[in-house]
Image 1 (cartoon, helix red, strand yellow):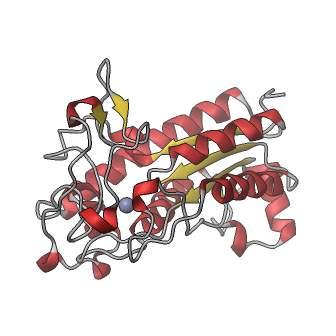
Image 2: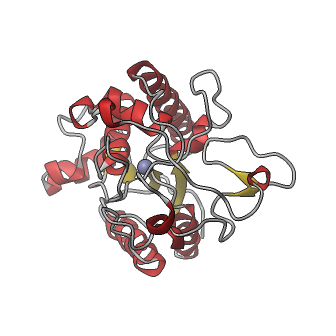
Length: 270
Ligand SMILES: [Zn+2]
């Protein structure tokens, strides 16, 4: 088994790709981001950059294939009509995910990981089960699932364009971040926030995930600066700690899948 000189599907020829699936790894990661405003201090591509760069680190450590990253994501109702944000409808996004993985499977890949750096569980979960019915082994992973209750690193729970996302930007693509414009943002839930699980929060009994209800006013009416949380306490060091933790957890999952289902075997989903 030899390391590939390329990490990404789009950089390979077909013979290189087929050799990879047969001899190096038949696991492929689909990094998915979004195109979404991230306040006055961070670029609209935060979620795409985070998915792409973290997936690249994961692939370097595990020798798995990287599918071309998806720059558009699905968004809950309250993100729609916000300038800077380009949402795909749920139906479109689910169909894209299913088609991409079905398409990739005929090249010899048997295990798929959707790696999301944006809150789009609502569509990845549906896609995973549609794919399961067709016999495809697919995991839906969201980066904040690996950072729950991460008070070692962060002062507050993760939300949007705040401490967490800005810290990761300072670590991975500081050239696009302007901390002189970092600020605190708004956002008040329509029910008591004690019932809502923030993206980076450990759930407690009786709480609902942030995507389980129409808990929010439309962003274009409510958010002055596009930030939910506080971006001012972001640091490069926090970003490095978060990325390291996510990458290590993903490497752990991939090692487990490789040990259980060696190259050339398909987990018996169907
Ligand atoms: Zn984001």
